[in-house]
Image 1: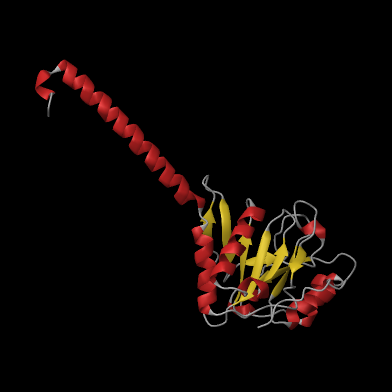
Image 2: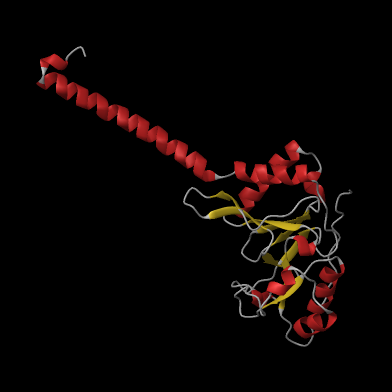
Length: 240
């Protein structure tokens, strides 16, 4: 597996991009143009089959094409996408640093796109295993999702979609590699490493440990005060 050269992406129509995704075996569905990121069709069938030429022409042809969503899981060859949302720049950078330290070169073959809200999507296939459904891998201390996967039965809006598909009115962009061209395949061990690193970035564990330390310190202080008070009030307690 070679590193991504990352040339400037060619300018394509939405229909062109849809055909590229289809050509590499990714099941795609149309996304509404109302900034909701919601599917424009009942899409359950496409979790188990690729679209037809006629369907793609109806969805993405014409002057006002729908956006493109990629369905993850078995139908797309074991596709999984890791989504970095809150505090994405810092989280993704730390994730990439840790993965590179554990498996030098792995990050250079993975495909990453940018979301309109400033997040990241990390794309890969792992055909050696069955991709589970969407999973939350790490959360903020306040509970918001920090890192999660899009797996079996899930989808992500893909680069090439009109900007009107996202609440910000901005487009999804290729960033390092192109999921419609450079899609890598990784091993089970490499996938497990990615998940393990993501879980290690969960901020709730740090917050919980801090709270426990505070509670222990506070509790010890209260017990000392209570003991002192009892000794003053009852001499029999002294020396116990």
